[in-house]
Amino acid sequence: MTPAAPCPRRARRGFTLVELIVVFVVGALLATLVTTMAQQHMPHFGNETAIQVDRQYDLLREIERLQAAYRQQLEAGTLNLNTLLSGWAPESGAVTLAVEAHTVSDTGGTFTFSTPLRKVRFTCGDYVMYAYFAQ
Image (cartoon, rainbow, N blue to C red; front, side, top):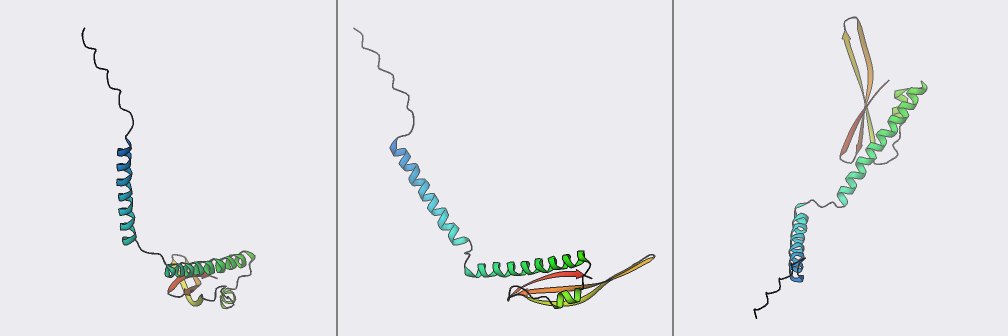
């Protein structure tokens, strides 16, 4: 009698539990390393950043409010720029205005134009923004 041929081994499918545990441990170590390095090298956004964002928002909101009033009066034909700017009161008490008069003029060929402008300086803390308005 001849010995029986050995049974073929089944094809191996999937991963063993040990292999899965090793992969998860290595992944956890890498994730811990990356988050630790990111915390050390990325800026921390604290209370001071929130204050800065609030100041910038206040400035932009005041500029938008003034521009809306300017457009409304311009479209209605009732614009008096000096009255608008001198009577303007910012909603935010932290924002202040300073108005300077400027004139833009040009002579070209057969025409000359001259336009009075108002340069409005909006200030809130250390932040400054400018807007220009024409009569």
